[in-house]
Image (cartoon, rainbow, N blue to C red; front, side, top):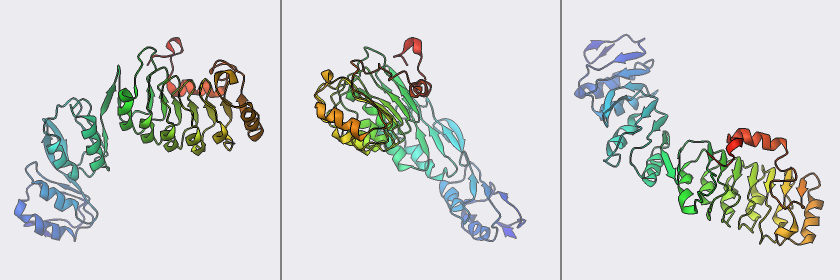
Length: 328
């Protein structure tokens, strides 16, 4: 068949149309409806974006191959990944926003150290949900990529606050989290971590546990020595198996845990370190007969808490360096 004045084999799967003038594109799109085997179309770098869009809109959504330059780096509309790391962007991503709709094969865009605020990056990510947009967030002496699955930030005496770690809400793929030994008074960021499996939030100032209810995959949780006194959000965590609530001095009600029969271990600790009625100590042991419950320890991590195969797995998951237990 004829396309733009040239004969095209109807069996072709890839067409080089870099020679095609802009005004011939509508007619070419009509002709391509008769070439259902075409899966890739090559255009010149001078082709306008509307031409790219016209070909991408054809039935079967063929891959359109058009080279272009963005912020001084070379790309192609057929690229599966884009790397803009360390490129300083000063146009509020206007040029990037122009090309992203045509990056139909792109599944990831890396944008570390581009000088863009976290809030603006989050808007960009929300506006282009088909592309995994990754950047780096910085908090205190730490920094992590937003696609990080493990965050270990528990160096003693750093004492991060809730404001310091609020940026972790952009790290939506976290599975293992240790923020112990800090001064964190707000854990709202965990609401944005649906894949969280391990959370060590102990020895901090936070009180509101409600964000944890969003972490339905949570399996291991340490919240000892915090200001959390309302355990009701934890009752929604059906996969939680290991829970340590020792040393919460104003804790007076553990009844929300009564129905958590999936718990394998529950460290409550000595009644000298909380306000829990002795009747509740007896009741939870009656209701959870298959759970190993500690009601005697004066140290949250002793009397077997760390002498368990689950802790060996935790070391592996968190990547702990046992010679420097609280370092990154």
